[in-house]
Image (cartoon, rainbow, N blue to C red; front, side, top):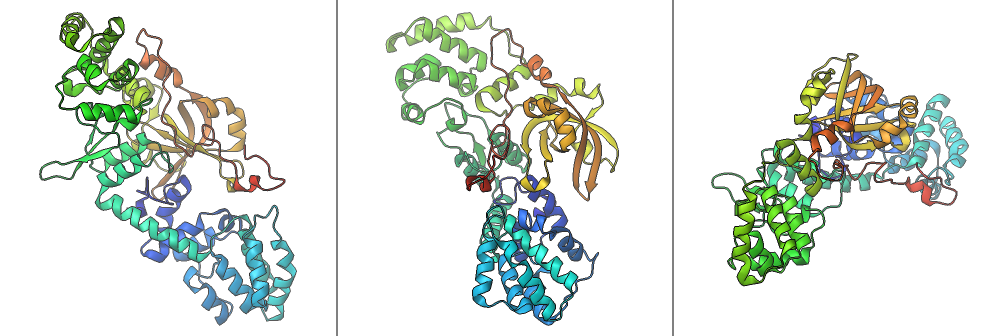
Length: 498
């Protein structure tokens, strides 16, 4: 599962960078996960440790140790220092550092370079290695790799602790996908992905996901038994924007008290009309035989005439009589309304209704993209889930676009970003044109031109009402919607990441 980067929701390895690395590293045992956790960090990247390690692991480059002492230190990582403990051992066995001096080196590595002092050890380490018979060029390369830890690297013990949680998370996701998704949703906000992506991933792993419903849901997401099958995932009221847990507790307490319509629920549960409208907009009255539009009509009837408990039956008749004239809500608008109320939809993906219009301009789906050869020109489009700009990527932005078949990963280099800055930062539905880049199953589009296609979403949502625009479920890691500063900026003299 991890070898094919099936790791949405898995602790530490669900980021774009980790999902790109997993198919290249192809972890086969626990220590591979220790390396996986540690290698996608600014330190190993800046210290040029990643590619040498991958080449050696793949058998494309020989593993050579200049001395038995260094083989003892670097044997598990194929001659490449990936952990802080290894850097300390190299300093002791190859450069003649005392344990106290090695600990000072550790402290320097644990401090970000902008305020650190790791460069002060360069001469002592290189000269110490040369004096013990090591080639000066090798000593310089070795220190450069160690110097990378000043940009943030892991101790091996830290990586091993994280790797254990990686394995536990992946095991649960593999064997109990419904429970895993349910727990993630109930723990929000956390992690890398928005609920829409977690729900979609659960469905792709065979989980039956059931909608929010006044007759079946609880505040939290729950599991429901299915005879002779794995459990289904029932979405809870917490997924509906604007609901309060204390009000939903009153609804749960009133179940079985005789209400079978909107007015009865209002009277017996004591919910505010605004709350009932939110439930109606979330299409949560299906178990009462009411679709979204009919439920909204009955909710509006409560506003027109506050009804005592004993009069609610007459009110239902009045609402039913008028409701017969309500036209059925189009499928596309149903999906848009789901996104507005829940930030996700179990009915369909918005782009499934736009595929014809997109296809006429040559846009391919994410599924088709995955099969295209390298260097082929292509157009892709999707809801913008996340835009990332890692500090180690030299200004490159990585965007993830979602359509009805999957996700497409887009690389936006600085010149392209500057040319299309407003589109990159503001588009809800983004079209990217460029060339395919691939390494095995890892596929990207190197963007050359970007187009904002958000107008298609507005057309899909047109209903004659003053509804707010659709806001796609942006992932928590998006650097535009959820700016996150580099940890180094919290230090004196730091600059804001953006």
